Length: 150
Ligand code: FES
Image 1 (cartoon, protein in one colour):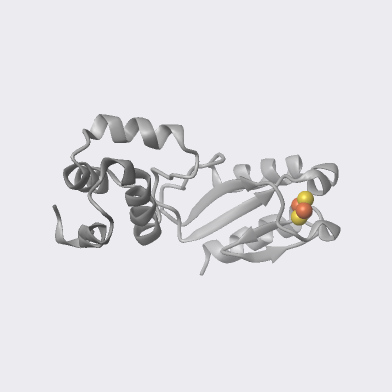
Image 2 (image 1 turned 180 degrees about the vertical axis):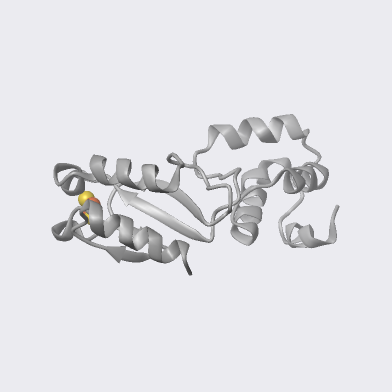
């Protein structure tokens, strides 16, 4: 097993701890890479194909490396009523990616979330946890362009 996955040794080497192991990997790397699957497979003695199956079953696991900027689009009830579908279309159009994807430069990744907890400011999105409120097309584009030029 690669030295960088040594943190797995803190988890008992029981096949039933597979999820814990994968969560640890994702906690450290931000996603579950092919390389880490190999390490997890060796450590727990579980075939890689079985691990792939588990990963595709649980939505919590990401198989794609997250971008430098994580864009979370709210599609909770309040934001939906206030036009989150439009915001979603603007962001996808601007970044050229869909929900769950990362752009080719590794700058942006995109996800849809249920509620960012500031419904009175709908529609909202967050970028690396910073919330942007009452979005219209112009503001949304401007925010993304600012991050892209950082
Ligand atoms: S529904 Fe969007 S912040 Fe709550």
